[in-house]
Length: 88
Image (cartoon, rainbow, N blue to C red; front, top):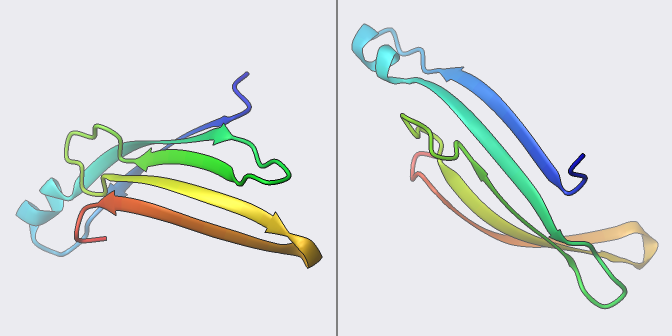
């Protein structure tokens, strides 16, 4: 339906042994990855995405942008920038 969009979800639990921390460490998250531009002869593919998008606890909230270019001999080069929680 949307070939350039990937949507995923996950449920994570932090298990420290402390019931107060463990209860606060439960998190449901939605993740999105969007291919903005496909790779062409002279330009790289461009993608943006995020993890734990607008989560209630936002334990792993992250945003990123990446560029990937295929080179001769099966070499792929990827560069990107991400911003998220300092605990990652």
